[in-house]
Image 1: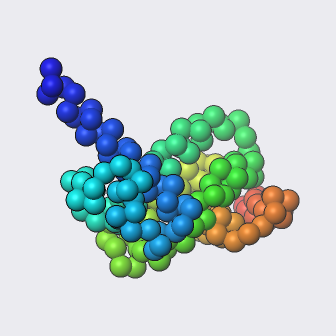
Image 2: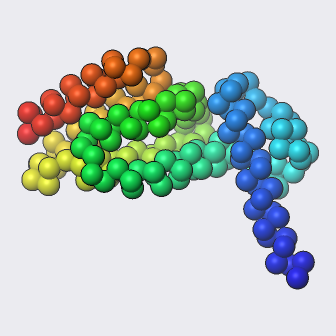
Amino acid sequence: MPRNRRPRQREEKREEIVSAARILFLERGYEEVSLARIASAAGVTSTTIYWYFTDKDELLVAVLDVVLAESLQRWTDLAELDLADKLGWVTAELKGMGRLVDTVHNRRLSSRAVDTWHENFHSMADALTRAELPADMPTADAEAHCQIITFVVEGLLTHDHDPATARSIIDTLVQGIVRGQ
């Protein structure tokens, strides 16, 4: 019986570490948070973190995976919305993550783990966005539009805009895409 409990306890401990890191990264920023601080917040020793993660960047990727998984679960509820409404939802859903977006862009230059996550995220975002564009749109145009949409959403997440301004930017972007077909 103890053998069945150990893997669950290990996963629970990992989740506690990721949860503590998520809170601290969002509150204080990645650069300002040490692994010792995360360990303390999670109720473990610093050494324990290394049983689960090779380094702070791998822990960051675990945090990003959790945030992304939570958002993707809610994304499926948006099937009936148009592209502008979906993009508005994304910017509202992830607005508090601007600090992590900046961190990913900074860390990807020096961390293979973060760079790989970033590339995979963009591929996934492009695929989700492509599914929202007209099926008959030429591939080159669709690829360009997907990248532009991702860049605009990232910009909205990392710069302060009131909701009305953010929505105006999104509406202008989507209208330009539809007219430019």
